[in-house]
Image (spheres, rainbow, N blue to C red):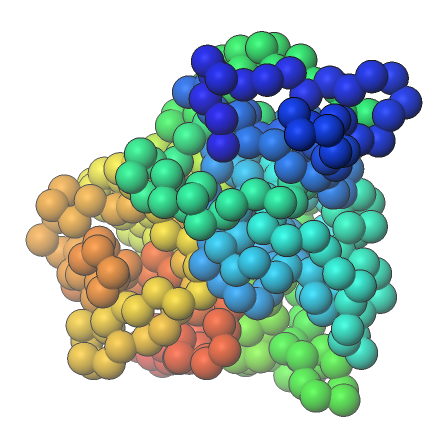
Length: 411
């Protein structure tokens, strides 16, 4: 890491692959930089797409699931720093992509790694991570002290930055600093329009099984309408596995459009950006749905949308929660779950009305991780129960939703 005052120009002479050091030997030429809004410049080696993109830098503590993380629409607008040093060892494949549209661009703005990507060693791998990043238009940088960057984020919060990868190693550092400083940040930014579906579609694919792959739902018991704020495939699969025929609708769908589909339940998906900004059009719709008494379940951004719909507020977090080792306590059972999280905003429990009961809490920082309404069949969680970070501690939430639907239909 270098500060603005002591940063030395990195541009080499034309056509050279290395630059001379003060001691006389040649050093590898940096081909990527991460420039923070405060002027700090981190030099490294480029991977993935040759591009320059602005975003908010966060860190993720997961040691597996990098392909799922990099295709999670909730990461739109963010540059992901992986704290685990060895990313890419198992390659990539076509089955683990989480965006619903396989052709859709990834919302993630870049990736920061400690070590270079190695050749994959896994029977499911079809492509090297570097080639996969190129195909998806994601620039990356390796050779970064990710421990130091993570410590900086923990101390100072998630910075705005520009990540740039250029094979010739020529960068206009001052222009990149200005671009990083000019990027407005995620507060007030509605990123859902860039990741939501553009039209309604049905879903019947179920979860993956060893030596079988993904299955299909043949005899649905319930019909669930999923509002897509950036939904992940595995959420839809677990809804289908629980016996639900799923109809996915765009984030801008009206309450009348949703209710015209005669759903037995409504699901509010995960998604990126500032929930208050998305809430400008989503909250009135959710309020109408809640008033009808239709069972409603929200995850991540969907949880925040429910919090806003009942009168609460959301706040920007200092460093956010991003990883697959987050302990959460279910206050309704007393059990602790190891969960996967990805959010930079949180519901402020102090602003929730009395009928919104806190059901889950983060054991890392005590922040709210779930609510349920005392007078309506509505509940939500801040974390990702579908992500299965090793254990499947949180899959019961889909069963809880289906049980709620069954009781409502029987009433």
